Amino acid sequence: MDAIDVIKQRRSVRVYNDAAIEPAKRRLLREYIAQCNSESDLNMQIVFDEASCLNSLPSRYTDFSGATNYIACIGKNSEDLFEKTGFYGEQIVLYAQSIGLNTCWVGSTFIRSLCNVDTKRGEKLVCIISIGYGDERSPQRRSHSISQISNCTEASPQWFRSGVEAALLAPASVKEPDVFFTLKGEEVECHCSKGQFAKVDLGIAKCHFSTASGHILAI
Ligand SMILES: Cc1cc2nc3c(=O)[nH]c(=O)nc-3n(C[C@H](O)[C@H](O)[C@H](O)COP(=O)(O)O)c2cc1C
Image (tube, rainbow, N blue to C red):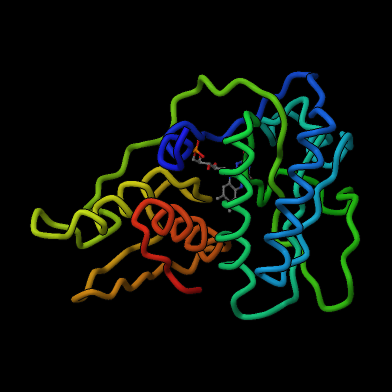
C-alpha cells in the first residue's frame, strides 16, 4: 500500500475491540515515535493498556468505547507547538494505518488529568490520539471541495492539485474547512482560522499535502 492509499483508507475510529496491539507493533510504534520526537523536538509518548483516560466520560459526551491505548502529544510551549504536533502526529497516524491500526485525534473528549504521561516543566499536553483495532467501515468525511480549501484551478500544476486533494482527506477538529492553501508562482502559502485546534489542523493538512505532492511545506 502506498502513502496515498493509506491517506485514502484512514478515517477516525472511536469504537475499539479488545484485540491487544501485538508486541512487535508496539516496538515499531515506539521506534517510529522516537524518530519523530528526535526530528521535531516534541515529547510524544505512547501509553498502552490504560482504559480510564478515554472511556471515563459519560456516553452522552463521547463516542469512544474500548479505547485503551493512546499517543499523548506533548511538547515545549512555543509558537509552533500546535502546528508541529499536527504535522508529526499525523505522520504517526498514517504510519499506524499502514501497519493495520486505527486511530482518532482527540482534543476534547478525554479526561486530561487521567492521562498517564510524564509532562516536564514548560511542556504542554496538546491532545491525544487513540490507537488500536476498531471498525473502520464508517464513511470518511469528504464533503468539501478543492475550491473551499485552495486557489487550485484547471491551470494549476498536478503536484499542487494532488497535495490539495490529500489535504481534503485530513482529519480536522471542526466541520467547516479551517485551512487554506494558496499557490503563488511556485510557492505555497497556508493559512488557518483562529479556532482552538486550527493550528493542529494546519499541521495535519500540511502533512497530507507534503506526502502527496512531494513539496514539503515548512512549519
Ligand atoms: C485536532 C483534532 C481534535 C479532535 N478532537 C476530537 C474529539 O475531541 N473527539 C472526537 O470524537 N473526535 C475528535 N477529532 C476527530 C474529528 O472529529 C474527525 O477527524 C473528523 O470528524 C473527520 O473525520 P475523519 O477523521 O474520519 O476524516 C479531532 C480531530 C482533530 C484533527
